[in-house]
Image (cartoon, rainbow, N blue to C red; front, side, top):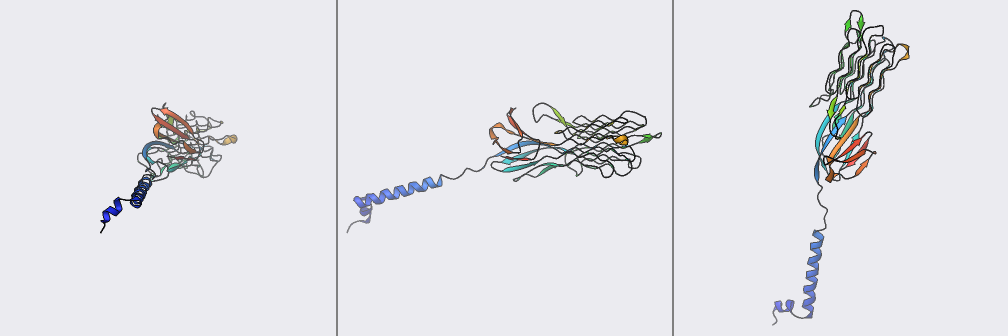
Length: 317
């Protein structure tokens, strides 16, 4: 009787069997080696500045408070390759002509497994007769004596704080002026003795390379019939308050500055809030080159690629 091993190892038919088995095994090896590599994870630094608020030109009481700066936040997050991240950039608030204060709009970054990071729009400037100063990323300046208290900053609360309170309106010897809007670093100054409060200063960042200050509060209006000067805007794009019988200055776009307040008599205008900005900084080696919304992109900033969004868009890691 022939040994079964001889049948498998000798003869023309057995060689074909060996050959087919070897080829079949080879195909299986190739199949197992053809999968997609797992996505890489890399770190990104983010700066999220919301839209600044508009100042008030209170036409009833003739005293309008300044707008607060947009909220200022930074964050370091891990991004996952091939994941889409959505960027929203907040608009500045319009001026308020009596009534409810005009806040700025929020800015945010969201997507994948990261926790959504949101900066709140600035709180609008108050007016004497009909509206309190608004709360927001930074608070709006007050206009008294009916509504003498500045708006609260860091609303909703974050850690660390995204902004400071707006200034109060103090009534001194028959003259009163309006508070400055809060900034990312400093509170708005109080308006007193007829002088408008100076806007609170913002916070400096080197995410784009050179130091740039963002999120300054607007300056308060002075008393229309004398007294001191209007308040200057805070460093970081805050608009100046209106001098007697003059217009206020807008907050600076893409810095999130608050607009200045003014005396509304004679048709003068308060400042509108500055638009916000969102900036991502990723390692040059990891930058995918896939964006929407037409951000500006700079490579080689200390080994980082800086993606600056001045409008809504996306980044695919």
